[in-house]
Amino acid sequence: MVAANAGAVDLLIVNGTVLTMEPGAKPIVDGAVAVRGQDIVAVGPRESVRAPAAKVLDAGGGLILPGFVNTHTHLAMVLLRGLADDLPLKEWLEQHIWPAEKAVMDAETVKLGTLWAAVESLKAGVTCVCDMYFYAPTVAEALEQVGIRGVVPESIIDFPTPSCPSPEVALEKQRELCERYRQHPLITPAVAAHAPYSVNAKNIAKAAELAEEFDVPFLIHVAETRWEMETFQKEKGTTPVQYLADLGVLSSRTVAAHCVHVTAEDIATLAELGVGVAANPVSNLKLASGVAPLPQMLAQGVKVGFGTDGAASNNTLDLLRDAQIAALLYKGVTGDPTCMPAPTVAALLTRGGAEVLGLGKVVGTLAVGKRADVVCLATHEPHAVPVYDPESHLIYAARASDVQHVVVNGKTLVENHKVLTVDEDALRREVFRLAPKVRGAVEAVKAKG
Image (cartoon, rainbow, N blue to C red; front, side, top):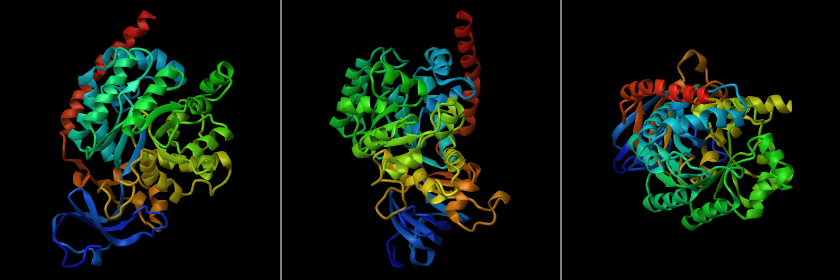
């Protein structure tokens, strides 16, 4: 804690109940968080955290907590929001999304989509995003411009993408990205292979080796659909998880998105190898992919965090809403009202996500020495009054619209609901201007059959 005679700090966040999200920690009523540079230097009761501050953020009696961590998304796909709904995943991808991406997703468009997605994310309390898309340098630059924390790869897939004509080119771009963003304060470079059904074993192994060389996250979609599970069992005599384990590519660096269709043996393998699971409950529900067995994973010690997936299959980047739906979903499917209780879900939303991405020592809780990624949630609207249990309130009553202030890496990015680093109105106009082009491209593809 900062003593009364301590040196000045850059930012003091006051007048709120602090949820540090440290394991076993109790809420701090009338708490405060002090920030110097990018780091948290004090957390505690207001009377014990006293120092001259260059800036003071007033939480207005609400909640002060770590920023939410989105462990899996495709940011620029906000531009495809609502373009194709109520379809199975395979048809959705092959007949709608991939043709649209091929037609409109160039570097300029991806930058616009990423900027817009970053704004949406911040205003929903998300301070760290794990993207999995194309034009990685452009994505990283857009995230830097907004100021949000990001894990960024160049995705490998066994056919040409908007940014790479071949997997070989994608691998080379991955290497360049890892070299460029070593030790960056906001951007963590990563390596991504799309999925075991869309990337051959040789290329998956190369991607995993590159991630190991640079000690960065290795991202991959795994066991998202029943079709994927049945195909692997029929053609390879194994499950997607065991296939990847046999390739030797699963490790504590791996972020496995979805893991909906997994066996008890798969869960044990994920736990044994330290794999992190990016659970996407809303996207999986919308695409009827299924319900991932998160309670069983958590019971086995698997690292789990929440992801939104892309806005084209969600259809928002409101991670809080997705966590809230998860809390209800598992009660319904298990018939157990104690399943996935609020404290567990709140932890997955914050420190759980950070641990999945390998950032658990950097963000995810409010603790001295960690980066200052902080969200202030207002609690004065009718739906938010009264507050008896802050974690219960967060998971069962709070809304993204309650997000009042957002700080990332010690910098205030949202103040009184307004994004400070980019012109939101100008970006909105650009997105509206692009929409007819996106629609036209898809209609043209459909017309060709």
